[in-house]
Image 1 (spheres, chains in turn purple, brown, green, red):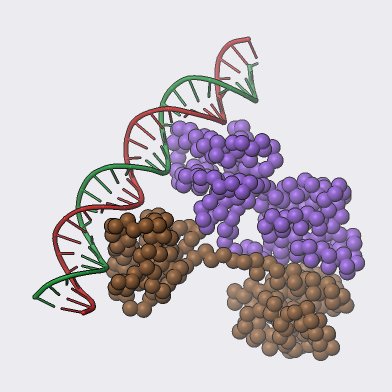
Image 2 (cartoon, chains in turn yellow, cyan, purple, orange; image 1 turned 135 degrees about the horizontal axis):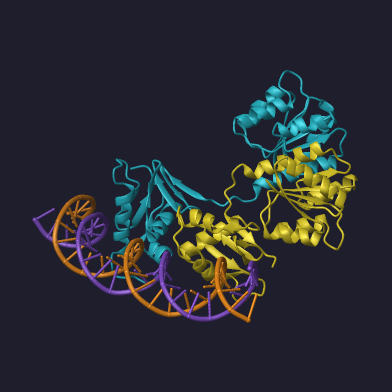
Length: 226
Length: 226
DNA sequence: CCTCCACCAGCAGGATCCGCATGGGTGTTC
DNA sequence: GAACACCCATGCGGATCCTGCTGGTGGAGG
């Protein structure tokens, strides 16, 4: 399960991250709201664990509200030292799904995170993928960036879909050949390069922040951050 | 929102039920696990609020496990006097989605119940159309009849989609020209006839009950009945 | 029986799409 | 700094796929 932890207290963060990883999950950590928002918006996580109070403008509630405004429905668990009922209600009303107060037992945190992750897995067929301002609608087979429609060809669509389903992760050429081309061998040509190039041309042309990134000697990755 | 409350303590039950109703929800109440299970299994609720301890064999955890075993995924909030972390973890692991310990503030219960109800209600866009044993999956752009995959071309797909969206209703040629071909004039040819014919060939060939019906001097209609 | 409407097979034009090769650029290594 | 590996972009050619039209046939309705 891919989990995003946004927590400024380094000690708590280390503790939680370690525990979740030992339970077999993948954990990304951000130390402030701005970074957290960025990651949450650009990559797909199964669960977000947010500190309610965060340094630097963007606190937990603000973060959730922004995400929900963007149509992001990832389940959110708030972690907070604020025990007052009012605070908890505020967090839940803002779009949080659960609220756990510090100090907490790690076993309970884990159980709650897994409970949250369980739900959406009850297959809700994703109908649209989103990375930053780039959206891909599986139903209408439509791609838009910053609201503007972009025409892509079938193969390009499959390629982009695969990249977006693994946003934030490096996708190797071999994986692409398998999943997008159904090739189970090396075609000895640069088919992939060509299609990536064409996608780039259509998606990133005219935008200062490119979304498709090359990872030398590895493959490609799509995400917001440069 | 339809909420099922399973709680043996009459006082608590009255209090919770009243509060939820005042917040605009519909509440059914069962005083023991057996009744609760029966209601939950036979009617559709948006959220289940279960007492962890219940008289008479079927307690909260048992109830959830049974429901989950039946494929019921309704979100569950446990209400319990058992505050031990182990107990909470047990409830969550059994398939519960949240766990609130007594005594609790009603405002928090309400916020949590509404948080639980929020998730699945996020509008589920229709992703597949179905007429008799014919299915059309918008996501994978796939058509199957009686489980067997059928290849259709893009235009045929649009045609079929439009027919199925108006299953049981006559669809005129003019409507089809407008919606499927984006023609706003009469092409003076039998384009439609041809495509309908091709669809028929693919869909109804080999089945005794045809789905596509001609309505003379009117148009076409798709439906199960002959 | 006659007429009109609908059906279907075949055909051919066209457009789309895709993959390859080539030449240029950039980062890396020695 | 030179050689190398990796990656990028563009143009081209081919092949497939798709689509719409024609024209003859069948059947329903009057």
